[in-house]
Amino acid sequence: MELQHILGSTYAVETPGALLPLYRTAEHRALLVDTGTPADAEGLYALLQQSAIQLTGIFCSHAHYDHTGSAAFLRKRFGCPIFAPAFEAAVGATPESYRRHYPNTAGVGPQLLSQAAFPTDTALSPLRRSLTVDGAVFRLLPLPGHTAGQMGLITPDGVAYLADALLTSLSHVKLPTSMDVGQDLRTKEGLLELDCKAYILAHRGVVESLQDVVPANTALFRQKGEELMASLEGTMAEDVWRDAFCRRAGIHTTDPFKVSITHRNFGLFAAWLQEQGKVLRQDDGTYIRI
Image 1 (cartoon, one colour):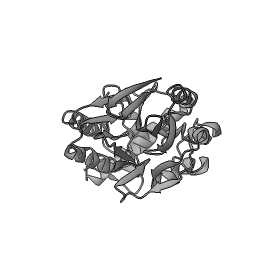
Image 2: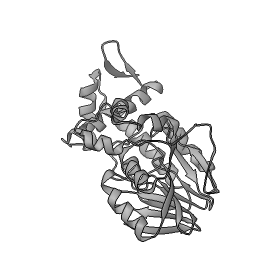
Image 3: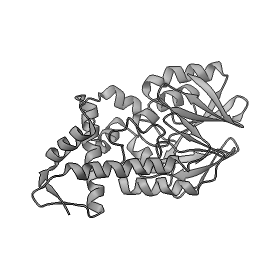
């Protein structure tokens, strides 16, 4: 792991799977934004210790294990509070609440869920627009869609962290994770109104402009919708339609967790197509194109 300088007092911790913003409120004090997976915990702690950085706060953008997996661990080590969007705080409060919100966690054991769960000290209303830590004022950005309560923030240096609202590497994405596809698209398109000095995307991307990134992301979502539509022939039960889509998209995984994620994501994209009036779910549970 390394600490990458972005701008002014804004840095990012480079983990194997993500960029985690870190804002230095003083020479040896900082707010960490998201915490990576449970496997990142010891490495994060070692890096912060080596850098003589005392965490005075942790901001969790949303309750996914690859963003909250080290939160409880670091909170205990540094004795610092956790700030999180209210809805995400409720989802991630306990292993049980986590599993109930994401019932398709096949293959995920109790230990991982226990590590991913995190105690929130300050739950942030979706109407709240700023957060002050150590005298530094961060602008809060509601980013619903990927999850219901996802939030990003803008550091005092004018650097925006967009969590999982946008992706930088799109070629390998078979079916994006989005709890509300329509809302997700509206959130993405709204990001074009931002005027920040730089943008940090969680899964390893720092860009100075979103003018190319946003259209590429929205195009990917619409392309996946078209692929679902092309896979729906005549009248199909959801599992038959999903299997047809997976063959078309080249999704061949047999890992229980990945299979369950694919099933969930497919269902949410199917719901979006229904909202658009492109497909109809009939009384017997089968689907047809309109």
